[in-house]
Length: 168
Image (cartoon, rainbow, N blue to C red):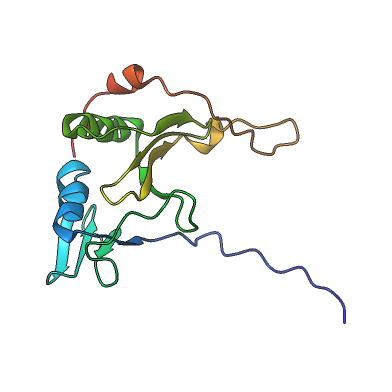
């Protein structure tokens, strides 16, 4: 039988939401709603909640079905490395950074990848989060063969904070 090359995935496919197991639903809601600014769309009693931006049905699902009062996962365990939240502009990412600072949330790091600028942190349950914005595709760094030339350079957080506050 001849080998066939699988067709690539449809370019319109997107990762739509993340659903996280949390130990304390109220604490998790407070972080995603009050710190990051997501809207609470729906609650399922004391067990689950769904939050979104812009009226979408949900971008973040939170549940305690198997994790109520559970411990954080150990650092050397398998599982989700981080969920990434894409902001539409650099100014929107700056707004997210200001929210984190006001709430006293510590960053694990920040990186300029050439294609994007990203902030890395942990939610109250230890889940890794990347908050980032993409530069326009025509500004992405490329090698001479046209392939991406991503990097991990530092982000100038002071410069990011000079971005105007978005009016949404």
